[in-house]
Length: 184
Image 1 (cartoon, rainbow, N blue to C red):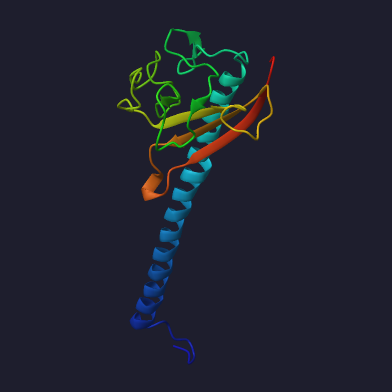
Image 2: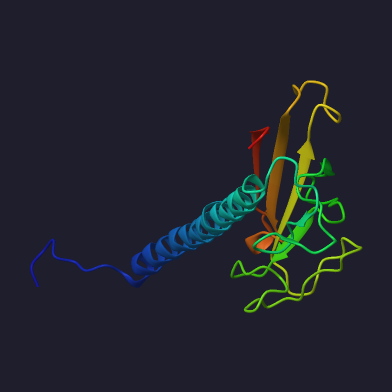
């Protein structure tokens, strides 16, 4: 054996392995956090925004003076239970108003529709149906409910939220607001 050619001792190998394991454990924890954040803010947040936009488009498609269409079904229809664009509702997802809330399953199907994994909610309560994952609430204001709005303008505000976040994170929630003018 030549002088100066020595291998590593078992202790040196164990110290290097210990350092490597410690670094990998830290990286694994960070990757778990990154995955959770991506799921909550990326995937679920984007879908909540998409579902809020869907509800907003449905409401904007109604005539300005429509106060009877049931907007909790798609497409909105006259059922005798609807509010159309009648002023009222709430954009607080934790305190929905009767007839101004609907629910979607995890795949985005409207609860009570053909392919949904959940039943339609009651017409007289805000109790969520079993199996829901996304909740959409909306509020309609005009100059009788908000003096800052001019005549012949309604403000429509929609909020969509998930039932929960992934891995204990806050749930994803999206808010949209638009103005609708008479006679459109």
